[in-house]
Image (cartoon, rainbow, N blue to C red):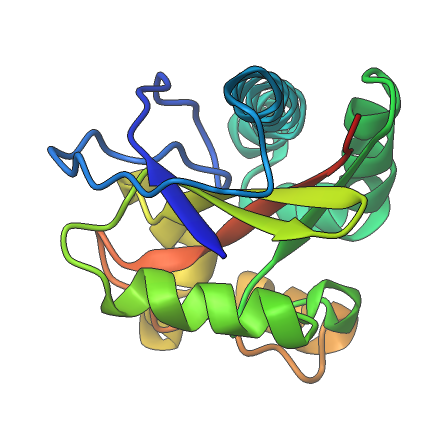
Length: 197
């Protein structure tokens, strides 16, 4: 069963972006979850997704400032997965993952439920700032990611990329699908899996 709630998180830099605040007040009861469990899942999902955005966003922002887009691509390739896992390990009973319908790294491709959530989010206007799916012993909290100006450096129009950046992307991600975005586009989600109590 789907569950939507609005929330506000601050904007972070680089290719990981925070969601823009919207006025969606859509709420639905989740009969599988008590109010206390819903609150725990929501708070944990918010905290874990924020921790990942700050950690990975900080790394990407530093790489962009110090070495440019090619350095940021290297951070994505070498550090993004370990940072994602590390951010999840900081919370008991939590696993973090980033996923999208247009992955750069094939390891970030969505599973069946992720794809359904991605499609639902893309078709819902205004887009909710969070989405929860209940699956037996696990709750999945989803935090949508929206393209910001800085993200276009590596995810925008290929024609605007420097030859060095285009070459680095082709070398590191030969099956890259994560370009062609415009400001404000829906990029994907952070998925926070939380063991239910």
